[in-house]
Length: 514
Image: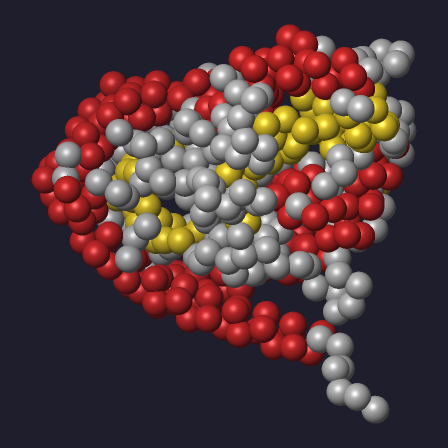
């Protein structure tokens, strides 16, 4: 995304794309939007630092349509240091774009109604703690001066925690030249100019602002700090690489503990093999494999702070796994194999890893023809992500996986790994900057490249592939051999940070005097 404690690998090229140029590409949801006469496009910033901030924001956004405010886009969620009054908890911030027939003062009254419903004390300290803050930043391209309201918001230019979310809402390629979006587009163009400093061409840093994904019963996941490693725990006898090697629930827990000790940040538990040609289990069979393992992991002290992912494309398995203690859902089908998955994840209110795949494990290798692999993968991921958001999954809960090894040829897998920026460029809004997960671990195409016929002999190749993925913008690597990939990620991160610092020095203006 735009701001982090360290620059986001692979997004440096994308940042220049996102913060320059005009808005040209027409988004699907707006292309079909038929606003009524008098409808205006508005940008609203939100924030909270009291109680369950994420829940406060979710409740507010759900209430807006009942007041005549149609939410079209949401930004990522950001955690920011408090401004003005610094002796208070950190804030959760974001922004949304909406359509409304309400006039500016009517819109203000509606937002105050939502703030009041959250329990906000309007007589409290100015800039102090609050359960909810909703500010009108832009109302089309109108300037409003009233004793109750100023638009544009008078302090937006000094607030990174407003500017960064605003820039998440639309990518520069999207066409906002038509009514009612044109006026808002002009204002967002001004934000882009403010975000870019006058010299050097680099995006502004904001060390007190970082995007995050909320995890149930765990601290917010500030995913941009470094590369994260997802350890693979297969509770299945027919996985292509290590099927049947983990014996029983206790063996699974011990393997999870070993991976965490080696550096796994997340443990991904799966009971359904997704190797080419795999037979689909019944829901009951899959539940029996994974739920006891997840429950035992949640009862293990060494794993209490470790996020657990459930690797499934079955909505009911996802539901029971989360009830047992899983923190996120990893769906290799992106919702294509179970029509109830998106709605189920929305109800579960957990992060959703949406992977690109065509067909199913029994047919996917017959569906590997692409004219432009990265273009089509990105476009197809956008379609599924749009469906997920339409079912109620917020964009800031979506992690994207382009599906290395799924409905791709060997050449196609290499193109995906090297073309993550091209894939990202097909995504809209804040999806373009959400974390990207890749799983090249021990895949067959690595065996073809190296001549290693046994999957377990491909760990060196996996480490090389992981480093390459990271250099092109991957944020999370899914791996069997955690120790090897952890080392590769540490080196790739260090190289990226060094390269970024060198580029910054080259872009700095010459300060020497004549």
